[in-house]
Length: 145
Image 1 (cartoon, rainbow, N blue to C red):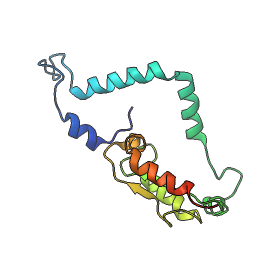
Image 2: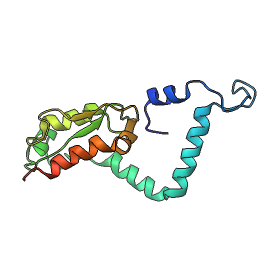
Image 3: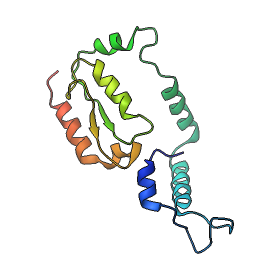
Image 4: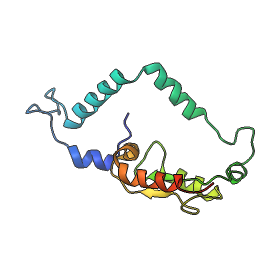
């Protein structure tokens, strides 16, 4: 599984073959398969699998409203300045969810909608789009509480 956007992968690789051997019954591979294998292997060398499982379980089970009331009540009680930033093509944290958060936070930098960065890089956009993400974070840090 990866969190890059389908449009980015299609633009980069389309249906290109990795070599002269056809992936359509001739034991060849599509170029995107090679890319995904390479990055998957790199990831497993850098990241402990058990740590990743723990993080995924924490993300999947987290519920900010658990034993606290409605989403509107919980988010509405936050008085600190906040930044809600989303990547337009993020499949892990969809932009619609970021807008929902911003709608209920009383003191966001961008009002009742999230700051949406248009990026073809999916979830990785928050790392790759360093300048606009950094500028948004700098604005938040410069905000007096």
